[in-house]
Structure formats: structure tokens, C-alpha cells
Length: 282
Image 1 (spheres, rainbow, N blue to C red):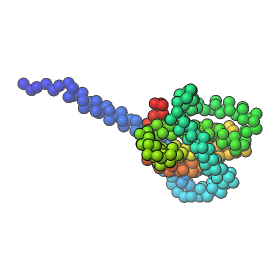
Image 2 (cartoon, rainbow, N blue to C red):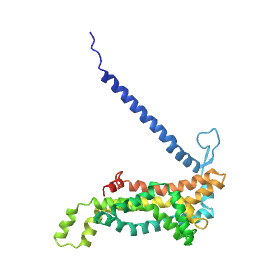
Image 3 (tube, helix red, strand yellow):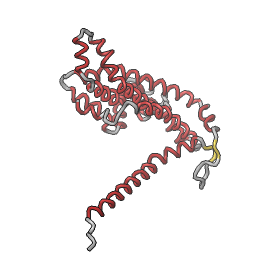
């Protein structure tokens, strides 16, 4: 008689097929929800003519790029966005990096609560927080000013500039520092020659991610900055709403993506998926 095939040998290929089918469905859904719209924006940015039912543009070119980049509002918003992002990144580094070192190396009352408070700014929708801050800024005459936009954007940088460096400082082997101190090195020299080189990749990743997030931040800049301060992200909103030419909005979106994409490609060499979550262990 032919031996019966065990049930588990039959169910294993079925489980494999189901798993592969589920993975395929997730990939297709990812393409439709994320990659598809991004690809459409890129195509529109270089399309001079694209009409239904063509699946791709029928005429390519840079005509709309010249029109977009010659706009006075674009030529004013782009350098302003770069300057704001650099300023916010610098101020965040000056404020947050010493604080992250203190969080990593010192025990003081309320330490855990303060760390969680930085996470709270990203745990809830920011629009309500921005509206509340706008009421205070209005009384301080900061609405519609560059300092007001800088302050509101610093709020967005707290999580990156506190948690990633804190985790990095905690990951340094303290025995290396103690050995250097034992042979007579000063604490400043130990920090500059031992601690700083070990945490520098994480610090670079935090700074780069802070610049990227500030460059395309729109809600805070919109609520606090208008009508006098218009960044590229805020300008994109007005162009999409007021213009019937799709290429203008697509080109602005493409310009916003490029610095972020290049910096994130560089930063991914240093930052890992557990860089922020490691802060929960403090």
C-alpha cells in the first residue's frame, strides 16, 4: 500500500504560497499608495504634454522648469527655506546636543519625564499644538516673522536632536573613557578624542535628519509665518491651490524632495531603525 502523505507536508507549501501571496499584495499596495503618486509627480515635473488616455507623457521637456524657477515667489522662497533650515539645525544642535549628553550621563529628578515630553510633541497631531503656540506668538508679535518660524520649527527637531544623541552617548563604552582618565588625560581631551569620534556618526545622522525635516516642514511655517514668511513647502500649497498648471506644483514638490533624498541616502549609512527607540532604555 502507498504510504499516506503527512498532513504537515501538505500544509507547508500552502502556508508558503499564502505568505508569498500576502507579500505580493503588500508590495502592490505599497506601489499604489506611495510609489504610484510619487512617480506621477516626477512624470508631471518633466511633462510638457500629457493627456488622457496616454499612460506616460507624450512630450517631455524643461519648459515649465524655466517658468517655475523664474517666478519671483520661488526665487525668494528657496534661499529662505535653505537659510531657515540651516539656522534651525544650528540652534537645535547648540541647544539639544549638550542636553542629550546630560540626559545620557547624569541622573537628576524628572529626567525620564523630560525625555518623554520631547516624544509627546510627536505623539499627537501637531496642528492643535501649533494653534495653541500661535495664540502665544500673536501676543508676543512673533506671528508673520522669521524668528517666530524658527522657534516653531525648533519644536519639530527636539525628538531627533535629543533622543538619537542620547542613545549614542549611552552606547559609548565608559571603560575607554576611564582608562584615558587613569593615564592622565583631561576630561576635555577624553571627550574630543574618544567620546566624540564614537558618537559622531549618530550626531551627523541627527543633524542631517533635522535639516531635512525642517526644510519641508509646512504646518508650523504656514500658521506662524503667513503672510510675510513663505517657505518652499508653504509656497507649494498656494501654487497647487491657485494654479491650474499641474507642472508647477510637481516641480516644487520635486525640488523639495531632492535635498531630502540626497541627505537621507547619506544619513542611512549611520542611522539604524533602533536609533530612536533605543532612547526608551534610558
